[in-house]
Length: 362
Image (cartoon, rainbow, N blue to C red; front, side, top):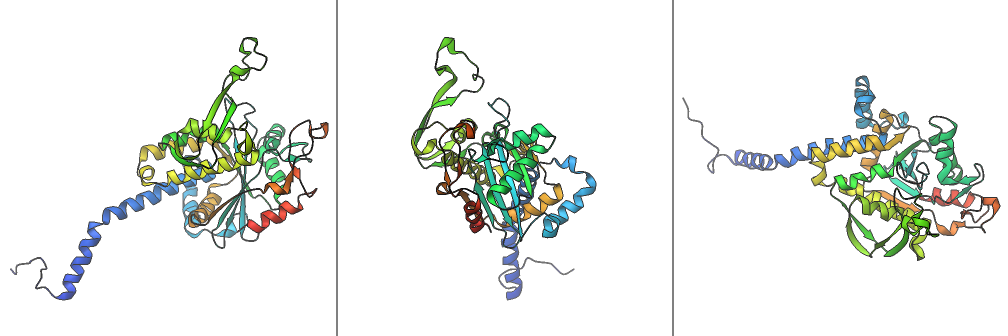
């Protein structure tokens, strides 16, 4: 029998080249495997985050359709107009928070089916909406009082009036629950642009404390401080950072608060995409459970698969904005606005805001 030997230096040049290529591929095959696993796990997380569905609730017969929609992303099977799908993302305080159904985080997100660009615009919670005779952050609450699912319906129609573009889908995130992801991932890095001090940050659970007769109820509040610069935040710190509303100066405004909320959400997104999280089944399962318990949405699983594909394709084309302050003004506090501090359009109607938003859409 002819002896079979390993291809060596005297083998034909083509054979030696083939062996070198083969050895390099085998040497790095573990990276390929980790990449495949990471892609699958990331897809699972983002899918759940986007749709708010547990896979068990989708139904086994829908799996094929969901996977097909993710691969081919047929834009005709997701609601859209002019090649764009618009999503309203609301953040509410949740259990243990005063006015838990008010949505103090209001984000209008637009996903392009043409170039996979994603644009998000944060809206101030204090915008006065004459149609409901209340601030925009209460639209979800009032809609929910009318009927089941009415919260998203009224919130979407209210935001449509302000931005001048249709809102095809909606998501409500319980921020108290969702912020747990920060702790699950081991904390997030946040760049604090301006340091600030808030001496009236409410202490959860002490909203009705009589403070032994203290007329200013000082025991209901704590003082929180944030120094300028990049820092690591755990869930509790991140929650205080996004909820603070009584700081002195610029950081005490609603617009600054909206900007801080965007920073934290983007930091969570970046942390979830790190190998440390993507290769940890324990962390991914915890994230999955948190999202499952914290998101309400009217996006179906099949539609969510299409939008997920677009969002992943546009991960490098992600633009964030806060509605320009110069487009708004706050009138004197009066019974006309239920004696509240509110924003109204400086132009007298929403037309200038419509143009501003349209110029920034993908």
